[in-house]
Structure formats: structure tokens, C-alpha cells
Amino acid sequence: MTHIEKTIAALKEKFGGNIVDVTEFRGETTIVVDKVAILEVVRFLKEAPDLRYTFLANLTAFDDWPEEPRFNVVYQLREMTLPANIRLKCRVAGDDPQIASVVEVFRNANWHEREVYDMFGVTFTGHPDHRRILMPADWQGHPLRKDYPLGYEEVEFTFNFKEIEKKKPYAKE
Amino acid sequence: MSAQAETELLDTTLDELKHLFSPRAHSGETVVLNMGPQHPSTHGVLRLIVELDGEIIINAVPDIGFLHTGVEKNMEAKTFLKALVMTDRLDYLNNMGNNLTYCLAIEKLMDVKVPPRAQILRVILAELQRIGSHLVWLGTHSTDIASQSILFYCFREREKIMDIFEMISGQRMMTSYIRPGGVWRDVPADFIPAVRDFLAYLPPHLDDYEALLTNNPIWIDRTKGIGVINAEDALAWALTGPSLRGSGVNFDIRKVMPYCGYEEYDFEVPLGQNGDVYDRYYIRMLEFRQSMRIVEQALAKLEKAKGPVITNDRKVAPPPRSEIGVSMEALIHHFKLWTEGFNAPKGEVYVATESPRGELGVFLAGNGGPKPHRVHFRTPSFVNLQPLNEMSKNHYVADAVGIIGSIDIVLGDVDR
Image (tube, rainbow over all chains, first blue to last red; front, top):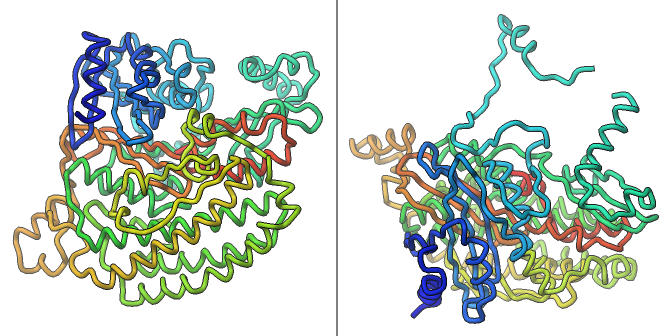
């Protein structure tokens, strides 16, 4: 029994219905967890003495818009001695994008969660420093959402130079 | 902006950030200052909001995002191959490593096998890039700690690596040489002698730099016991690379989760003990030599390994030019690849490599189409910068500069 099989069995036994699905793709295991249980699942994986997923390698999200629930928050956990990698995935609905923060279990989740909030607008309840991180503090919208358009700059020629310059958001005196 | 407006702006910023500073900052007992973003010793556009008691740092809060270029968003709008050029621009000291990690993720997603000659070339280039990146780090870091002569020497050495890259790819920095399925094209005949020359050229110069720094009492005064992070904290902050190994944790992705056949090479992972600036410095000095060892072994292998440098899977990699003139199918593949690209299956993969700074991870999701559904770069600089506040507490401002240098951040890598 590999470490990952043991992990899945332990999770199913402890959390039952909150473990929604387990998939394998290209040798990587993804465990879909109900978002209400994420904090407890992460804490269990880190603190159970025979599982020891003590390293949060990555935390990110992606958007499946227009499907619902649209957001997927992804946690990449690692057991450091073997090593063994698993991925947790939580689906978060678009009308109420909220999920519990895991900062109290993994300190380094702090910036990752701020980035997910910044880019997708998913709020992390219980986060100690819930601000934008990469975009300016007064930015409107969340750029990595699929319904957020990819902006571009209009090409200036001599005939439309003045028109385009007028629209540009230069700093005012 | 008028002086009054400026003060108001500062006040609102302070209100929003109240929870990050000690109560003494609100009573005016300590001073809150800006350091950066335009500051030569923050290695790019890093802004630190530092709370000072005299010259002692009470809190140092990094404010990042000044170099955010929306690479991840842009990549979603391009085909897998077109998006490759954006990876060069993330960590601009580790271009080959970024190409490599992104291509490994595509190859995992598409289930493509890479020919052995390409694997060896990838190892050589990744290690040369590590040497190049460490040279820039050594130059800038020693300049930060007021040892200014080394910078120019380091850049002189790095230029030789840039020349090798230019020889094989036509570009010094933005190489895009490593492609999904292999590498762009085979290296010219001059490549192996040029790398051999470089391997013979560098060691005496490295000895010089070590003679200047390693036992230099001023250098030791400035680095020993500064910015200490113990092994437990380093793991809790998910530090990787030299920053983690400086604290004595033996974790190198090339060893524990090998890629590109790193398991076939004989090399050591240098470890520190104290987790201070000096240990992180010394580990990188040893890593130079280990990287050179790997390149030497790989060159010997490269001489023996003949064969293609990119996969024969025509659905991912273009056919050679010679085939296009004679094969209709090759022409169709060529046309389809350069117009539409290839379709990746629905699914998610995560690939991690050891960049000069630590674990560079790519999370890649496909949706059945020719464009990535989501690319996320788990960049070592972003993660390693987080504990800066912990590391620089109760040190002098001048030491904070040394600490930033010792974790070796690249702001393009932090902000993406």
C-alpha cells in the first residue's frame, strides 16, 4: 500500500462524505474536498503522525466559468521524507466565493491566498491580512477570472493619435 | 502632489496596514519608512515598509506587485507554444529553467516522451543557467554588503555563458530554446568545446572570489548570525533551494524528485548549519562546483548520445524542414502546429524543478483545446520572500539589504 493510498483511506475514514471524489491523472492524485471541511482536512493531513504532509508546496486556483461552481482552489501538499505529493481541490461557487483560510495550519499560505483573492476574488475567511497583493489596492475586478477581458492598447496612427491619447489614463496635475 | 495630500495618503495607508506594525508605531515612538521600490539594493522593484526604532528594524513588510505583468493571464490567451516565450520573462536570470519547467508540464499533460539527447542538453543548459544566475547573485549580493569589485568580474564570467546561449539559440537571455518535446534544434559543433573552455576558465576565478570573501573578517562580520532562520521555520514557510538548505534541510528536487535524468548524475547537495546569510552564501559557492561537475558528466554523455533532439510525435513537435518538401503529411502537421497548435487533454498537472532559487513549480490545466486553461507559476522568489519580516527583525537596516540578497529574489519571478 503506497503512502498515497494510505492517505486516501485515512481521509475517507475520517471525513466520509466530505471527500467528494478521488481522481488520478498522469500519476498525480487529486482529492476533491468539500470546501466546508478544507481546514480540518489540511490540519489532519499535516498533523496525523503517519501521514505528515507538512509542506504546502503551492496554493492556487482556476476558474471554470461559465460552469458552476466555477472556482477551484487547489492545494499542493507534500510529504517531505518519501516524498509523496497529493493535490486537494475545493470547488467554490461563483455567487458566494468564500472558503476557510488555511494560514493557521500553513503559514506560507498567507501570500498564496492573497494572490488567489487578488486574481479571482475568492475570499478566505479567517485570513490575518486579507488584502490585494499583486494588483494596486484600488484595482477594480479580478483579472484571472475567465469573464475578465484581456485588455490591450489601441495602436496609434497619425490619423487617430489625438483621439487615443485623450482616452489614456495619464496622471493629472 | 501637495504636501498635505501626501500626508493624507500616508495616513490612509498606515490605517490599512495598522495590523502589520507594532502599537509603538501608532504612538509615534517608532518611525515607519518606505524603502524602495526605486532602491538599488532591493534587487528590482521591491518596496519594503519598515518600522524602525533608531536603526533597528522592528517590522519590515514587503509590498510587491510593481513588476506584475499578467503573464499567467496572457498565457491563457495564447497557444501552448506561443505562451512559451512569456516564461523567459518571469525569472530573467533563469530563462532556460523556466522554459524547461513549463515544457516538462506540457509534456506531462500531453504524455510525450523526450529523446535522450534532448534530456542531456536540457541538463547542461539548466546547470549553466544556474551558474549564470549564481554569478549575478554573487555580484549583486557582495555589492550590497559593500564589496564592490566582484560585481564586474561576475558579469564578465556570466557573459561567457550568455555567449554559449547565443550560439545555440540566437539570443542571450530570452532563449526559448527548450521546446515541448525536446529542444529547438541540435547544438552546433562549437558548443561542446565552448562549454569545456568555460569549465576550465571558471574555477580559478571562483577561487579568487572565495579568497576575497569566504574568510574575509569584514564579510564574516556582516553575514554570520544575520537573518537566521532555523530548519523548522524554514520548512513552515516552505522555503526551498539554498535558502532551505542553508538551514541544514537536505531537500533538493534534483535528488528527491528527479527530472530530465538527474538521477544518473553524480553530485552532492551542499548543506549549511546555521541558516544565516553566511551559510546561504557559502552553499551557493559550493553549488557552482557541483553544477560544473554535472555539466562535465553531461558533456561526456552528450558526445556519445546521437539521435533526435525533439520528439517524433508530430502532433506536438514540428517535422524537420527536410520532410516538408517531400511529405504531404509533414506539411499538414507543420501548418496545423503553427496555426492552431496542439490540443491538450482536460486535466491538471503540477511539475516542480530546482531553479537556482528553489522550487519552481508549474501548475498547468488543460481543457481539451490548444490553449492552457490555467498556468500558475509557483515561483521560488515569491515564496522565499515571505519570511523576510521574521528574518530581518531586530537587525540593522543595512543587514536587511544583506538578507534580501541572501534569499536571492528576482522581482520578475515574484510579481510575474
